[in-house]
Length: 65
Image 1 (tube, rainbow, N blue to C red):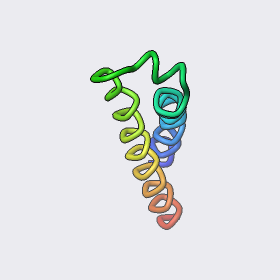
Image 2 (image 1 turned 30 degrees about the vertical axis):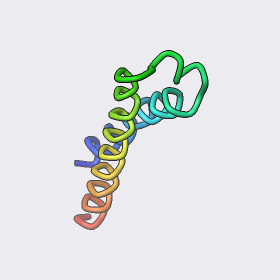
Image 3 (image 1 turned 90 degrees about the vertical axis):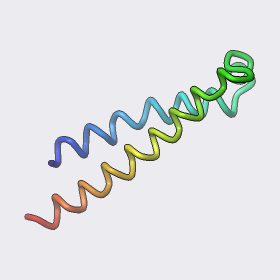
Image 4 (image 1 turned 180 degrees about the vertical axis):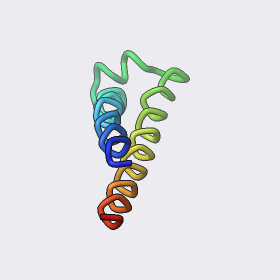
């Protein structure tokens, strides 16, 4: 379970970077305008879910030991 948690936390990093680039930089906003702007927002939501799930799994795995 610990490996899955670490994998989720590692996978969340590039998703969060893509979210930040697509939402908060001029180049990212220019690349993802109008309806295609949902991609960076969706990656931010997925990164948040991965972070939350990874943190919960790490806490649970540490309590089991």
